[in-house]
Image (cartoon, rainbow, N blue to C red; front, side, top):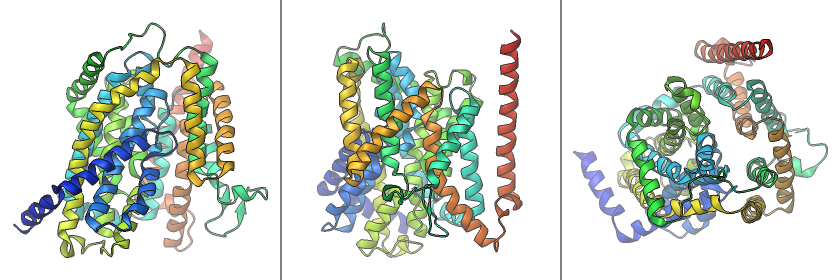
Length: 506
């Protein structure tokens, strides 16, 4: 009964016009900045952070909370239309979203990701509401060795699902891991592979790396290929009515696959609960499982709607899930969750096991704001997303400079450093060369992102085991996960070797 009373009180606070305006503003801000390559939801939250200093706790927290799912969705829109995810968590969306765009079904793909994102976000918010305390306690008991093993398993899954040669996918992941080593060592505090360059002392900045490898390299590929993003002969989308019909078609296609949606949402929620894992790993795991269980698994990566659902549903299902350990235990589930935690601490809100006891109205208001934010996101996406589809029909001579300018500005805005803008161009040229050689930038980015996470959890696991450097493989559960990853990798290598042998024999 007490919980019901708190929910009703929280709902009354959320439904105040001023609070709803802040939620709407958060969704619009997150969607716009999420759709700008190199910015994404985290940068959007950071930019809004100073505005919350003079605000009351409730509107400040719910506004930033609304930014998160909308920013993730906005990043998926550009992932579909121009093969450039606005956020790393939208990387897998490019696998099937962009091929659909090139086939002339870009608006259909936007409908799929809109429905998938909203449903995944709503189910994730429901999980946050119903099972936050027990799931957060479970995440607390997961030691660093297990999290390291899960991250390593995520790298293997990435290699398995990467397009083209699996060996090249593995090499790309190793390149990303090596790039992540550059900078100061978290253990000894000494510089590694900086070559006495002050710019590299803090490590390679992630935004210039992502923007360069994805956006700039895509611009160079477009210039190299010519024409437009859509393949020649693709059906022209000329009227708003037609675009609306295509968008509705994508929503219907998603609703026709409830098992894919629920499975992907469950994966996103479970992995999102684990601190540090979040939507990046859940994306790859969900996509791999979806491809494995689908009857049309061989079509994944060519414009399969099932693949798009697998990626995008888990993507937003992880957003609210990252708040489970954040709110109940005070352990941020991701970067965005950490910023929200900082806002609540700034407002003297006691985050942790006593949050729901001491300030239940605020706790439940945060949960309910996620429900409302996802519903508002549905309206915003329905109104604006299909209009962005026009960009894919524009000639390369128009699209390339637009993406180029936005990409360089996005890299510069990260730290307002001219060298970051230069790094964007350097990594863009590198990405173009790697693409021409058959290497996917995705594997490099994923290895780079997971590198520091794996290193930190490995160090923590060794320290917890009293200095045993093999603790991440000798303990039962981590050893099982690592062994499974190794077996999957070995099996796929054997299969690829057999395929090469058959091609040679023919």
